[in-house]
Image (cartoon, rainbow, N blue to C red; front, side, top):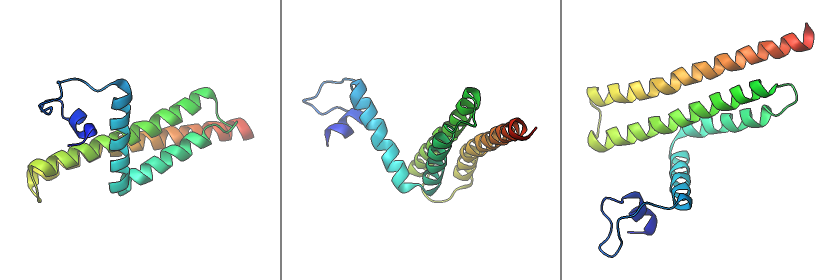
Length: 139
């Protein structure tokens, strides 16, 4: 078992390793590895991460106020974070309920709906900001 795996499973440390929490740096490394794994395996996460990056970069155009910039970035990364949680829920459900089952499907659908609702909110925020920019530029 490698050190990263040992750190992720502090409830069952090897005999020669005391039960400890990972350092802050190790915690960031574990989180980064989790993000890389999810990004490699999940198509929707790739799409959402790309959109979040583009929104972040685009928000620094001089068209946006600071408040608009923050609203765009927060909404984009909220969707991204919820997609990661949705992915984790799906993995957990698959672990305990492999194959298709009605109950498992309901759990996955509910988790996916959180991403959908956050996405709708992000789109609405983007539309409001777009209308504000059009209003400032042309009226």
